[in-house]
Image 1 (cartoon, rainbow, N blue to C red):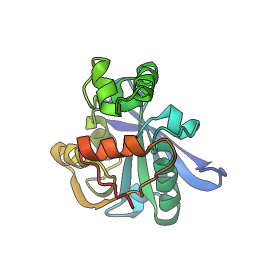
Image 2 (image 1 turned 45 degrees about the vertical axis):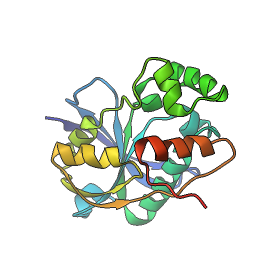
Image 3 (image 1 turned 90 degrees about the horizontal axis):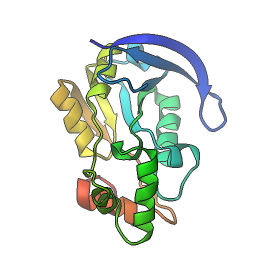
Length: 199
């Protein structure tokens, strides 16, 4: 059974001014170093905390790539949880599980006309190789069994429900449309049923 390994206080956000706690874990299924960011001690102070499962995206989270909406979704979650409390589970599953170099290869194929799923398939991968079991383990270690899930992705809701947790409410993120990511966002809606709206 997964357990909390270390819990430390720090400040996060674009101005490094939002207090939070970073939590590491032991006895997760894999050797991936997933972490949680906890705001306002929501795992201890709230019966039904807001939770976001965010898969690592170096290109979006760090370099603010125009190809996706990941960095904007992460910032949105941080800012909302700064105000309301909550937990971000940051999973080391780059490129929907195919890894950074393969994702860059997929970007090249997207530049040639494929959508994000077609590119992954062309490289020999499935549509989405992520496994959210460890998100369930992390929540269990934080003693969270009932939550509000901040997501547009029905796969995440099903994964946590199948794990045995109760998703009491879904909280959709905004549609972060920008020059370069419209086809990517529309492919997520068409192929994976993401709940995004376009004007």
